[in-house]
Structures are given as structure tokens and as C-alpha cells.
Length: 231
Image (cartoon, rainbow, N blue to C red; front, side, top):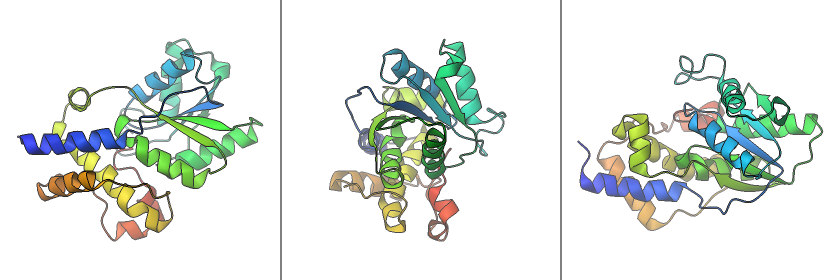
């Protein structure tokens, strides 16, 4: 049973994790692979709104996606986009990335190799990964502008979609921890975290929503640092 206080704190983190950017046309829309096929849907919706002339999906598989997306996250995203009517010629696939850092680096490299000039990127992720993806992208690809986007939805709607509210709160806590510890490791830019958000995070940790926290030991290793809590 999740207490009213814990849910209220989770709402604070949910709102903070989203960048609340005004969506505008960009050179390309990059959909970050994960367990959530809704990221592909959101990317296609933005493409159809004329927000990008090209889509790039990036992502291999992970423990949480291997059974659901055996051909790879980016490949399944592409298949979904094709089902939704996006022409094959307007979709690029980067099938190797296994974490957020690789998503950004490999997408950047593929676009460069393809001779596509990029000045701005519409970065599409899960709602609670917007800020983390943005901070990572700013660090690894500083030459372009980033606009963050995700499927507009409430925390309750997302918890219902996942089917495990406690796991969702664990993921919110894990994503916030990484915003706090990763900049010192050099893997993302530092973004200000308001005191109210930090306090909510600490209360959730104290209440045991910690299954997605990175250990101190793993935080010192590049592979663990860059790994998504639920990629």
C-alpha cells in the first residue's frame, strides 16, 4: 500500500523529471529505446505534426526488454512506426545502444555518417526520463539544441499503464538519484534540483522505494553509471 505522502512526493518527482519544453520543429526526432513502446507512438505523433522530417530510433535489448522486444528496441519501435504509417525512408535505426549515453552517442554518429546535418534534436523518451536524457545529451552532444518530449500523461495513468505503482515510484527515485550523482562522474551536465524535490526524494528513499538506486560501487564504473534503471 502506497501512502498518501509517498504518492504526493512521487507527484513532485514526476513533474520535475519532465522538462516542460514547448515542442517546436527540429532537424530530427530521436526516440530513445526502452520497455515502453509508447515512446515510439509519441515520436510518430510528433513526426506527423511536422515537428521533424526524420525519425531515428535507438536501442538494443536489455534484461527488461529481451522477451518483449527480442529483435531490439529500435527495431520494434521502427515496426510500430511503420504500422502507424511512417514511410520507411523517414526512419533510421541504431540497434546497438544499451544505455542513455550510448543512445545519444550512437545516434549522433549515425546521423553524421549518413550525412544528415543536425542543428536541433527532438529528444523523445519516457515521461520520467526527460530531464535525465536531456542532461546526458547536453553533455555528449553540446553542438546541437535539444527539445525534450514524451507522451503527455499523469503519474496515475502511467502507473496504471505499467501495472505496478510501486515499481514506478522506484523508477522515479532511481532517475532522480542519477541526476544527483552522474554529473560528478562526467556523464551528464549538472541541472539544478530544487530543495522540495530533494526532500521528496529523500522521504521516498526512507520509505523503501529504493530498488532502482545505483550502488556507490557501481556508480564508479562507466557501464553502471550510464545504464538505465529500466532500459
